[in-house]
Amino acid sequence: MGDPSFSRRGMMLGALALSACSPRPKGATPPKTIEAAVAGSWRAASDRARDPFRHPLQSLQFWGLKPGQTVVEFWPGAGWYTDIIAPFVAATGGRYYAVGLQTEDAEGRTLDQAFRAKLSAAPGLYGKIAFTAFGPTSAAVAPAASADLVLFLRNIHNWMAAGLAEKAFRDAFAALKPGGVLGVEEHRADPAATPDVMASSGYVPQAYVVQLAQEAGFRLDAASEINANPKDDHNHPFGVWTLPPVRRSSAPGQPPDPTFDRARYDAIGESDRMTLRFVKPLKS
Image 1: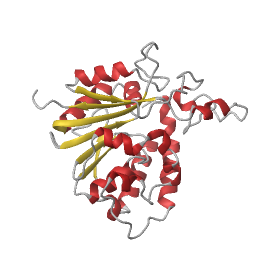
Image 2 (image 1 turned 90 degrees about the vertical axis):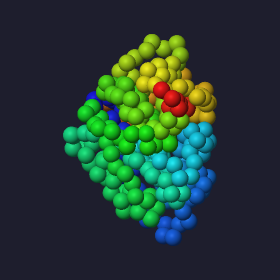
Image 3 (image 1 turned 135 degrees about the vertical axis):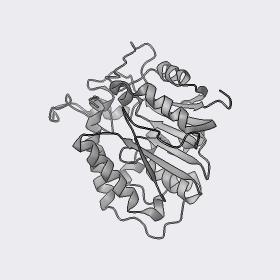
Image 4 (image 1 turned 180 degrees about the vertical axis):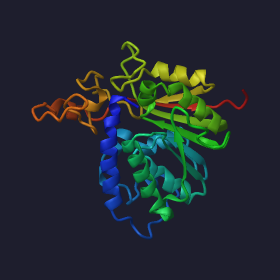
């Protein structure tokens, strides 16, 4: 997993450490609406601060999240969306599958263990989580044709770099019920950019994502500009990771550059993103 974005693991571990130290509200009302889940007092302040860029309410409504559904989230990281989806799913009688990294390296295992510990420590909030894994040799992420909604949230560039993109779409297709939805949020490359199968900038052409999904059997149902950012020109010295929330100021493996002028990149905000909804056909 040598993609440059895996420096995000350090940020994820930090977020998990902070959330583990934050007291969970006792007796919090189970969130039976998406609005209540997004407004949940258990969400970290740093996560809530990103809502104007990630638009969780509008995005989840666009993808069709409903009470009582079975939801599968691939590579949830530190759980930014998990803190919204899992409590809602638990409160409405659904099932949440957290599909973590299939990894042998120590840092990846630490991240996965910290994520599991965070969710397991608050069963009254998150419910009974089903933990599975996705990677080069992983088995099914969920029982065949069991899921109502599968989510790929800013990870396709990682899978492209690791040679896993086609497998991710195939595994999602297998997990979904006929008529089920695959929701995608991903950094969007300039349409005129030269396609890069390694996604070294972190940006991915929207047409390529559609192609991958269609080759796996999906039908594109809708595209939204919910998470578009017209300020993002997609051209940054350290790829998408130059922008918030990573805010990289030097090449991977190098210490942060204290002289790097962050002002113009911070003014852009988070990346320009595609938001797509694919459907598994009722009949193959």
